[in-house]
Length: 114
Length: 110
Image (cartoon, rainbow over all chains, first blue to last red; front, top):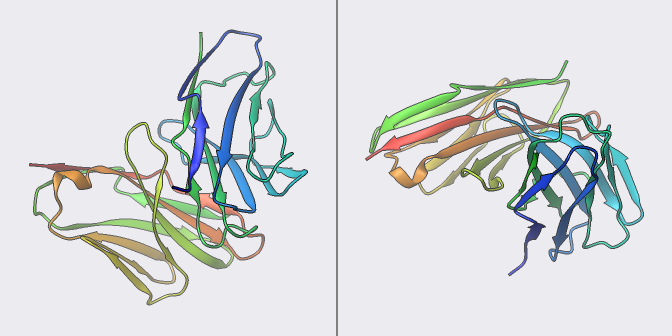
């Protein structure tokens, strides 16, 4: 079955550490996205990529980095510069580059700073 | 400023008690409006896309409608398994930006 796989499901980070969240899709979708979800807030866009080897900052990119070396993969690194990283992170993809048909989401990674 | 507001924040219904969730929006130009369902600890699941005022889409007990200012997600004779958070998102014409609302938490009591 086609879909988006996020791993790990739970991740714990110590202060000052960088951590990388994995996102893989086998839908052959062009565009991929990273969102952050906090209680009581709407989803906020961190980064997105419409084609391989290209990506754009979203609304809250500070403290995060991404790469898009393969169409199937869009990993997100949460750096030590991100001051409040505890959140639920969602990866999504869309068949068209503008997301006009809606998104397919992964099951999420919950990151906790310890 | 482009905005999406969902109401109510939370809704408790008895099984079989029909109701509606609201998504109101103020954007410079609407390209599309999306509804998603999200279960606790999981990613959102796509339900509907609506593109123009007057459009309606149905799926099982859910029906989504769209006007020039808002969308409704009508739930008819809900069951406990319909309990979830329902998210609305709007795509803006100008730059294809997608703005999510904060969601409505729906709880159906057996």
